[in-house]
Amino acid sequence: MVDIPSSNSGLRLRGPQHLYDGLFRGATLFFGLFILFILGGVAISLVIGSSEAYRNFGLKFLVIDTWNPATNKFGALVPIYGTLITSLIAMVVGIPLSFGVAVFITELCPPMLKRPLSIAIELLAGIPSIIYGIWGLFVFAPFLQEHLQPFLIHTIGKVPLIGALFAGPPFGIGILTAGLILAIMVLPFISSIMRDVFETVPPMLRESAYGLGCTTWEVVWRVVLPYTKVGVVGGIMLGLGRAMGETMAVTFVIGNAHRITSSLMAPGTTISSALANEFTEASGSIYQSSLIALGLILFVITFIVLAAAKYMLIRMQRQAGN
Amino acid sequence: MAKDLARYARRRRKNWTILGLSLCATGVGLFFLGAILYSLLVEGLSAIRPSLFTEMTPAPGSDGGLLNAIYGSVVMTIVGTVVGTPIGILVGTYIAEYSRGNKLGQAIQFINDVLLSAPSIIVGLFVYQLLVVPMGHFSGWAGGTTLAILVVPVVTRTTVDMLVLVPNALREAAAALGTPKWKITVSVCYRAARQGMLTGIMLAVARISGETAPLLFTVLSNQFWSTDMNHSIANLPVVISNFALSPYPDWQRLAWGGALLITITILILNITARSLASFGSSKQ
View 1 (cartoon, helix red, strand yellow):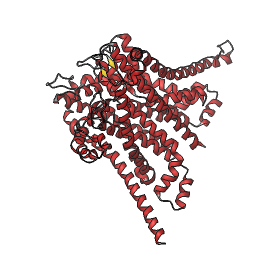
View 2 (view 1 turned 120 degrees about the vertical axis):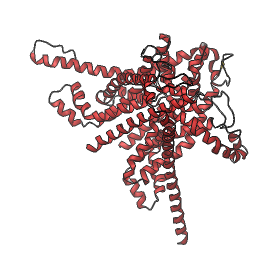
View 3 (view 1 turned 180 degrees about the vertical axis):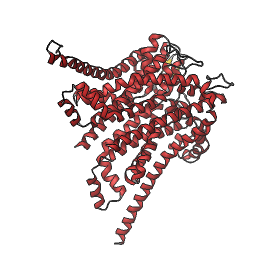
View 4 (view 1 turned 45 degrees about the vertical axis):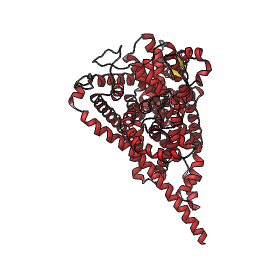
């Protein structure tokens, strides 16, 4: 690359090409490093932005359950709880659904329908968060309020212990609604990864199992799933990461109440919805700094979950490659 | 013998029950897709009128359209795509063509994949701290920057996936003719991977055109016609969000109209991108 154009005619042709080669390679490397810089920049900017909150509240910020802009007392417990519980509902409902879709597409579906069906399910992933929000607020929440929630209150709500989860008036909006919407939103992500990893199972394994007289379900449960379990868990964690960071859909339907209640039907808040709701109105540097601290917590949690997911999917890929 | 038969019948019953449930799960997924599109059409179609595209966002109670919001969204999406796409392609090129599996390349790919799924609201917070705080006000440029950061991982990912598929023989043939490496990449590899890369760009555009949360922190919105990228400009997602949460029926109707507009755009982009990709793969 130190090859400078010289009077030698053979080198004159080579010279600028070497320079271009160096420049092009340099540019790709530069922007490659830029990706690392973005991640580092996000982390640093969040740490700087939230430093005031941590100086004021220390690590107790994580366990304080008050959120009071009037007295400048802030704690992250309620939003963290909301994020975790809505994601948990999304996983409890979303995983079986996604698994069902993946099994249907890989094992049952006529080949002709496979592609259109996959595209249709993936279109669910293309619909933006805000559309889920509007639809959730105006269509889904009223539906739950009139039908599902009274039903739950009068059946499971009467059972001791777990009844407390389904007690109280049917608000329509609330933690349960947010969790259900998240379940629909993560379905395409999880099911498309499950489908992809299911298809990496060598046909020989499947056919051997069928040859022994296994039913389709037994093949899926005892051959396909054990073979692909790392990838399946990776896909689930990817969905979990998505669910935890989802903002607008949750903001619209969760009710934005800073309190922890035993009932899943009560309004609550999550980290992302608190940010979306309050950030632009946050007056006072401690208020804003506390919100950025929430963002930092979300960043750390989702980074860990997504990195773990990615790690598992890479392992799955290597296994499939061998 | 009878016991065996009974057991066989039980296994078959279990099989059909569970496969039936998986059919139901698929039905549930499709049902929600249909339900969302149905509500959008029912509520949104009444708002799709010529005035939607020619008038500004109104004050509550008066008539109006979404022209300023559509304009702002289009401009910011273009900025985001124009800035983000070349960066994404270069990063993808580094991973696929230059690093060829070294540690740095793997690290970049790993971080890129994490960024791909990272919450967009975090990116919004980052740009807020990076641009909005120093400038002292919200701006269209900050919004465009946010969208560009969201475009990069999508484009990078598809570029890598597509470049890896380009057969090595093509590169070797070009190299044997004395072609410099950069020219091999640009004229041979990019050309072979063109269709897939285009798909990636369309998916990226589809992704950013509905992004709302990060724009709340970076551009906010604007009630009036404004083309000044140095200040808040109106944009569809934030207008939809504000109008939908308002108590005024006129505004809510406009929000549904805007939502229908965005969704149709995104679905068209998605379907075109995917059929383009399948067209490319069936040709090979």
